[in-house]
Length: 114
Image (cartoon, rainbow, N blue to C red; front, side, top):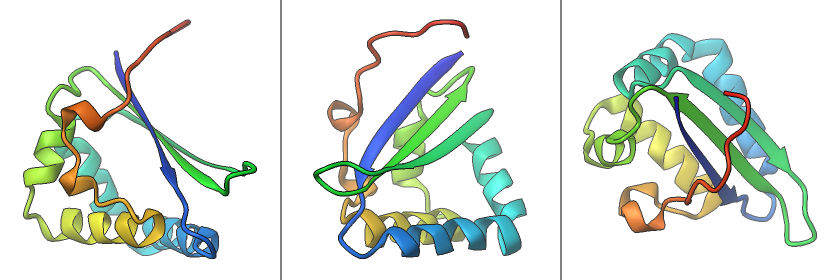
């Protein structure tokens, strides 16, 4: 299994906005979120909020058998859900994921027990 974990800053005052975003996903956009994950070949998703002295962080973990094109496929997508999803993350984090490139993605250092 391949892994991708990314930490995004949460802009000041936006932690509740993140929680509302998650609530929207769970309550009214769950099927679209599932379709998004299937199209992305993601089999496991885990999200966390981590408080730190530098502010809250939004941690996103994805696992799947073939994540090699996950970022580039997302960046190039014009699917309405993907565009909405990207705008939400941009509002919450201030990071436009569509402007990242492969060199901006995290480097995996250690895996145990998968």
